[in-house]
Every structure is written in C-alpha cells, then in structure tokens.
Image 1: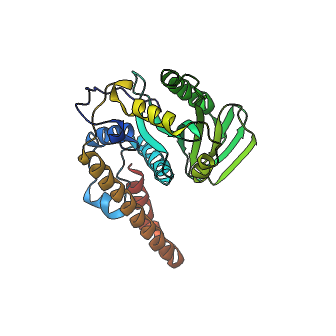
Image 2 (image 1 turned 90 degrees about the horizontal axis):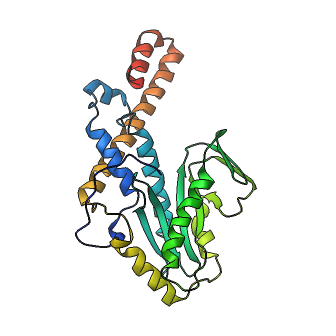
Image 3 (image 1 turned 180 degrees about the horizontal axis):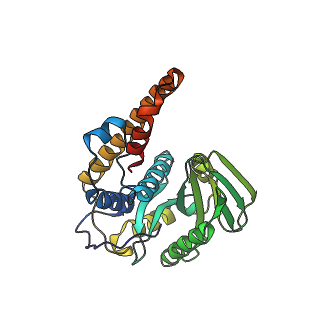
Length: 274
C-alpha cells in the first residue's frame, strides 16, 4: 500500500521479525489521530466514530492486514512470516512475506467490508470500482524476486497473492495468470497445499536474508506503545459502534411511539459530525 512518507532512522537492533503486522499503517493512523479534534462528551454519549476521517482509510487497511496476519500465524513449523517490510522511498511496503517449503509468497491485503468482489483476469472490481490490484501484487513479487535471486542459484519465482478481507460476495470468473486472488479465510489452506519447492536449507538461507534489516530500507523499530495505542483506539471504535447500535434500537422504539420528530435530526447531526 502506498503511503505518505515519514522520516525514518536505521533500526539499532533486532531483526525484521520485530516488525508488527501493519506497522507502517499503525504509525500513519496514530499520526493522523494525534492531530484530530477529540470527541466531545456529547459525541461520546451518542457513539460518534472516534476515527478521524483522515485516518479512516489507514485504520481500515491496518485492520485488514492484522486480520490476514492472524490467519498466517496458524501456519505450521517450517514456515516464516514477516510483516510490513519497507521497500519504497514513498513509504510503500510488503504487507506480508511468507517463506516455507512451498516457496516464497508476497501477500497483499485488500480490506473491503461487505463488498462485492469480481475477478476476471487482470480486472478486479470492488463494488464496481476497479484498481491496479493485480499490478501492485506483481510489482511486490518482482521486488522480492531480486532478493531471492541473490541468495539461491536456481530460485523459484516469487508468487504474489491478494487476500481479500470482509467481502460478502466474491466471484472469480477467470484467475489472473500470475496472481492468486482469494479470500483471507482460504489463505492458510492455499499455502499448505503447495508442492515442495524449497529445501529446508534453502528456506533457512532465505529467511536469514529476509530477517536482515540491511536487506530493506531503514525504518524505525516498533515500540510496545504502538500496539497499545492502536489496541486502545480499536476498543474505542468497538465501544462507539455498540453505543450507536443501542441508539438505533432506541430510535426504533421511539418510531413505534411516533416520537422521533424532535430528537432524530439532532442525533443524526451528531453522529455524522456536522
């Protein structure tokens, strides 16, 4: 996912295993939230969404990447997964890099809640809107191909995967030639079902290169406060959603009693932030 560039410094210690899922997006979410106006007590009372509109796309992306990471965490021994690997001067990263007996895979996350997804070759429509999803996945795999080629004498091609989170309908009429597009729920089974392409020694050599921070652009280590802040924000979002649901139920009761004319306009104004 292409992002706003942020100042970075070389990580003083550790390996790329220390990168947390969606780290680059978490940083962008919290950066934008820090500059946003806090909710008023009334807005909290009615359950107004705490996510600033500027941060909303980043929050959705981070939520999707972390959902995919949770799926990948269930891979068996012999597989290694790294997250949020910085590859572009403009802040671009590889969402997930997976290495195991079945080969090397880049996993690009698309998070679209309740979306209808249609795939026909290189065309991917999300609720009727197209984007360069396949092209982005191919570009990410090519970046990793160059690294693999520097480690193995006869490397297998890196295989790009697009994992879709949250879609209610997904239809693949014709699969892209080089990219696998699937639901996030199918990802682990897909990887485990791959024929063996790498020996244990080749996997170890690749993991050593991928774990080395020198392989990637300089970045900042994630401190525990990053995850704590995002977890706190996520709890606020869930709590606000529950409050809004409670108000909806209450309004339904008022509607039945014919008493919404006074309270409904003001409440809708608060919930929409106007």
